[in-house]
Amino acid sequence: MHSIADMGGMQGFGPVVRNDDEPLFKAEWEETTFAVNLLLLAAGCFNIDESRHSMERMAPLEYLKTSYFEHWLHSLEDLLIAKGIVTREEYDARLAQLAVKGSDL
Amino acid sequence: MLPKEMVATAIATGASTLREVDTKPCFKPGDEVRTVNDSPATHTRLPRYAAGKNGTIVACEGAHVFPDKHGHGRGECPEHLYRVRFDSAALWGSSNDGPGAVYLSLWESYLQAEE
Image 1: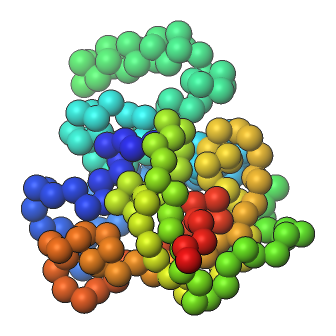
Image 2 (image 1 turned 180 degrees about the vertical axis):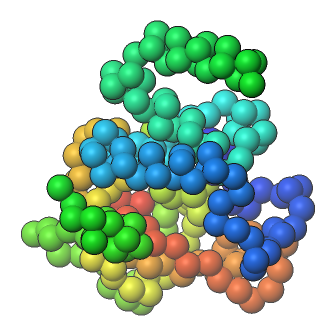
C-alpha cells in the first residue's frame, strides 16, 4: 500500500543525520519493546510481514509524530488485539490501570 | 525450546526467508525488466518510487517468502527474488543528482520482461 511509511523519494524532511556513536537503545522501554517483539515473533503470534503491514496502517499523523520503536510497539499491540490474544477490553483496562499507577508515582 | 546458548545467534542471524521451490526463475542477470505499476491497498515491498520503472536484473537471490501474501496470513508462497539495478535517471528523472543507481531486491510478481 502507498502509505505514509512508503517515504522513499519524498522531499522536505531535511538531511539524514548520521551519528556513528548513536546508542542501540535510547531508553529502557525501547529495549523491552525490542525483546517482547522478538519473543512474540519466535512464539509465532504474528510474522514480520504482518508486523510491517501493521506499521504502514498507522494513521499518517501518528506515524510521523512517533519514533521507530513506538512503531514497533504500535504493531505488536495492534496484532495481539487483531489476533484475539489480548482483547480490546483487556488492553483498555490495563492502560487505565497503568494510568492510575503512573499518577501515583 | 531454543537452548539459551543459541539465543544470541538466533537474534544476530534472524530467521531466513530462503525456501526451496520447484519453479525455475523467469529472469537471469542482464535481463531488462519493468516493475508493475499498481496501487494495492494490501502489503507490498515494491516501493512507490520504483513502481512502473525500468531496471536490469543483476543477480538471482533464490526463492524467498513472499511478503505480499505472508503479511496477510495467506501462507509463505515463496517466489524467486532478484537484485534489480535502477539508474538514478530512471527513478528521479532529470532532477537526479548524478550518475548513480539504486539496487532493490524484488520478487518475481513485481517484474515484467521489457523488450
